Amino acid sequence: MTGPILVPVLGDQLSRTLSSLEGLTPGDATILMMEVWDEATYVKHHKQKIVLIFSAMRHFADELRADGWQVDYMTLDDPANTGSFTGEVARAVERRGASEVRVTEAGEWRVQQAMEEWADRLPCPVSILPDTRFIASHAEFRTFAEGRKHLTMEYFYREMRRKTGLLMRSDGKPEGDQWNLDADNREPPKGDMKSPPVPTFSPDAITAEVIALVSARFPDHFGDLEPFGWPVTRAEALEAAEAFFKQRIEKFGPYQDAMVHGSDDLYHSMLSTSLNIGLLDPLELCEAAETAYREGRAPLNSVEGFIRQIIGWREYVRGFYWYTMPGLAEANELNAHRPLPEFFWTGDTDMRCLADCVRTTREDAHAHHIQRLMVLGNFCLIAGISPREVQDWYLAVYADAFEWVELPNVSGMILYADGGRLATKPYAASGNYINKMSDYCGKCRYKVAKKTGPDACPFNPLYWHFMDRNRARLESNHRIGRIFATWDRMGEAKQGEYLESAEKFLDSLEPARKGWARAE
Image 1: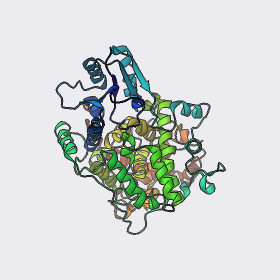
Image 2: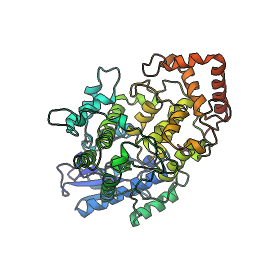
Image 3: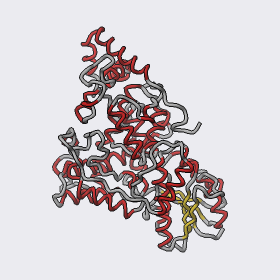
């Protein structure tokens, strides 16, 4: 074939710096963008997540056209749409007589597997290029990981600091003589915490059209469709980033773990959606944060914490995902099989912390990282919820969730299902942690000070139930093994009260109905 190079651009690849576009001019290539049923429904994504991705794709396509690129755009409701990436690429190759398919590697395992079959299924060469928008390549992570018993993020993070030069001095030492200032970033909420409002963006005609499409085609998907205010263009994402660096980064560090009922973002950046679909670049955000520090507009602990989340944790979980797939998706080290409770979808629970976290998830397709880890995730861990059901829930409900970032966080960090390859301990906690770091407990129907019985905070007996049933696996863990001495000192009677309270609570849980996360 002698036609143009065909460049498929996926919904999380909305970047001008995409490797598949490098070196091409508008005269060389046709760009293919596809809204496909398979991607919208392999889990039943939150309505706002689908709007975000489809609207951002349509805006990106218009921007490319304005710059002279030929864009073939297949909308979801086009009668000819085959519903899959492979089907649409095959049709476009035939339609355009493409001489080559050039694509940036996929972010998710299942999409990459399909992509690697294209060479055998298409009548033209296929080039799959590395995703250079990440700081660490797959090969770099493998080099870091091979031969290590535990893949501690901290050491990887230091390598990324050295590679990028972020917050590094000329003598090769970290700014402030410490690599990690996390100990300074654990302040509980204080008084009436009112953070500056996060910018929201009113839907334009394109977004309004997508909202109508999602309302009609995905009525049974979880989540509120409106109000919708996510950034869907790079210009909007840059505006949101500027607001964070001007108004909220100063207090982001100290209060990044704090939780306040009804306050859904506090001082968080709310930039993860824009970062994960490609509207923003990780290095540009980190450099903006460093500039805020250098100019005296933000303290080092806030800036280091923000940068660590991006070049440390984000890069680390992406590397871990590709290093451990496909086995990571099936891992269940703690043999957890309890069904996900119905209240994870409805919010109908007397546990005030969980009800609020489900509420913000339903309304905004968002909850911040401590709500996800230490409330929602902690409950799933200590209640012994099935990893597959928890993975599906997190992937479906959050607008920033793609499997490469969701699965390591859920399987490894939240559920310890990987047996400790990602995290050095299970992040299990009683109600005391939630009480310390939030204002949830004061008005809760359960009493956090009560340890057992029908009025006790369920996290309290569930914590000890989790420790007791997993003792054989966890007692040798150097970070938490000593907790079993406390358990043993309680004596059989007290232990029995904890276990009985936990079992009664677990027996009361209503399993989620079928069809919430995946079509039946």
